[in-house]
Amino acid sequence: MILYSSTNITESACPATSGSFSAGDGWIDAEEDWVWTIILHIMFSNNLPLQLTSFIGREREIAWVKRLLTSSDSFAPEHGPSSSPRLVTLTGTGGTGKTRLAMEVAQALQDSEDTSESIFPDGIWFITLAALAPSGSVAQALMTALDLREVPGQPPAETLVDRLRTKRILLLIDNCEHLIFQCVQLFEALLQACPGVVILATSRAALNMLGEVIYPVPPMDIVNPDEQLPLTNLVQCKSVRLFNDRAIRVHPHFAITDQNVRAVTQITRYSSFVLGHLICIIVVM
Ligand SMILES: Nc1ncnc2c1ncn2[C@@H]1O[C@H](COP(=O)(O)OP(=O)(O)OP(=O)(O)O)[C@@H](O)[C@H]1O
Ligand SMILES: [Mg+2]
Image (cartoon, rainbow, N blue to C red; front, side, top):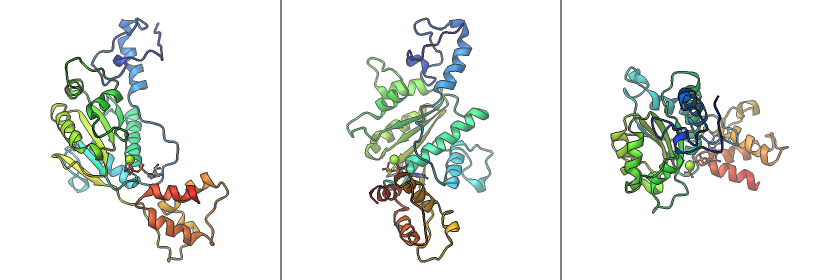
């Protein structure tokens, strides 16, 4: 009989932490380790936050980044590099959609983990550095996100390398731009010592480190406001769809009509590079 306490999730409950899971306070039969491992894998194989708004388009970008992260030596050269890079950085100015794209890629990979052979059996983990001060510790932020305990007397970066050395894990590390120097040092240490660690980073500026594949996030497709496209064709355009979707959330009776179509296409044209602006414009409309 297995007794599981959802309130008692300790460091040992995280698959990223160690090879063996302890029985905590004795609320699990140690002989049932394999069941425990399966339960933990299902419950803790990722910490990807659920998204509260719909995601529009980016099919090509998702497929490309996914392929970059999972390509193997047998991968056809015309489709991309011959072996899988272990650091892919999504770059672009603020609001281009880097975080959202990275999340969708991670979620798509997580969904394939659940249905086919696992590429990242130790999970897919989201770590945001957005709120971390430039004086903060990136290694510590990763330790916290992975629920790893510090080892007294050992620098967090060393503990992290030790614990991830044998793991096959994807780390989505968001908003690296204000901590580039620290990220480069830590990522180098992780990638050199931990062969199963793959990093998907987002940053307004590239890290410019060896082995990094930089993927500049392109703007969403746009329409020329002077083009007289029928409304049905217009809503195929991703930035117009995003505008329409978000506008309806703020003004439930909003609709793209012959009267406002030019204004909508102009707004989407000017803000497709910075989707955050597009969303702000809708909120103040
Ligand atoms: N394809 C998309 N579909 C729907 N919403 C999107 C899409 N891409 C981005 N967004 C939304 O646009 C806004 C800006 O995107 P995001 O936060 O990903 O930008 P960013 O490039 O990470 O910005 P920053 O550099 O400030 O971190 C967010 O509200 C996000 O949810
Ligand atoms: Mg971001």
